[in-house]
Image (cartoon, rainbow, N blue to C red; front, side):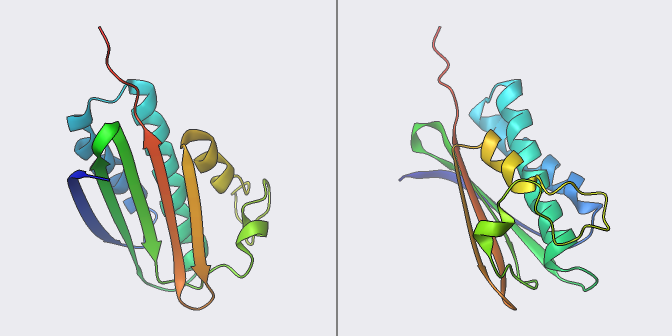
Length: 145
């Protein structure tokens, strides 16, 4: 599919950078003129993916999170969040609602469910010891008068 525009953003895996990731995505997607609801959904999905990378991918270690956003033809948005953290041993289990590897945290284990509910496509690939890549896609509504 035709790439109209794209941006890559790499940030340290720090919780404070979740807001930066949302801001970058919002600023970039303004050119596509999404609805307020679409933008909110995308921001939330990105926040969940970055949070997973920071909280679960790197645990108590340092690393980077790479965010790629592409504006494709036919008003489709492609988002990839990639880390080189600990990886997920069982992606299917990790995507189950309420499953968490950090029960001591305040997290509810709904990150993937939230991403899935707000996006049209969610794919998660992970290799233990190498990291996780989350790819999300969403087609924006058309602006018919």
